[in-house]
Length: 286
Image (cartoon, rainbow, N blue to C red; front, side, top):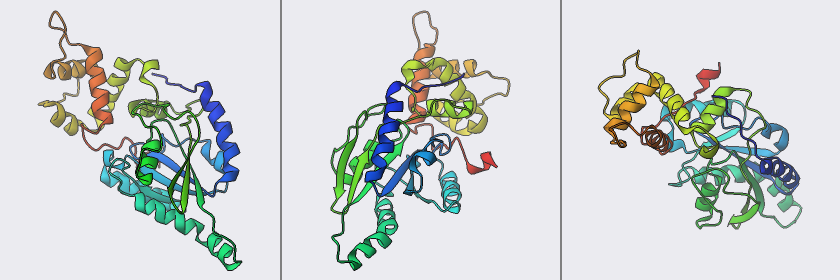
């Protein structure tokens, strides 16, 4: 399954972000903690340049805790400030504010020493679609300041949001990159909802996800769907049909509604109902 998705508004958004960078002090890059490298736009380094940066591993509650620790070590070894965040519950947000103050301390102290008025720190939020940027901002601001949704492409225009007297955020549309050189990255992005389901074959996507889960996380699958075993010879189609039958996804004639079962599987994976799962760990890239 070869997945590519780069609508025209993303190219426009990339140009706008490049223009807005001169207005900000810090870049806060949101990644999906379940797939930190696959959700990291390879063009961001060139876009951001030497700007101070904080990496937020968002949706950390949906990822495996041991993998989260490995990813923190991975990014911090690269002299990048990385923070685990669950934007829905608000965990990790205080650490983001603290990190932004630390990054700006030298500059602000210099301004104070010259008797100049200390300005509000401005940070630009950047990340792929559906990584939770707007939810992150709203939780920081303590109000519904940015539009949210459980699908990619909700944020279409820039939004400046003041989250505290000392910090103002610029929300930007989620951007992907023109071509996924790594087919696995495209697949993982689709699994986690960064690519619109409407342009995908949802049944094929679910079968690919099921294959990965059966190989890497069989115990979680068995527990969630009350499966006694997952034989080595079983195909993804057979497994999906078994799950659909157990869940009562039946159509006229007693056949399993594979489309409905596929949508259910994807929704439950994305919502963490199958368990806290990290599809990537730093060990995969050594």
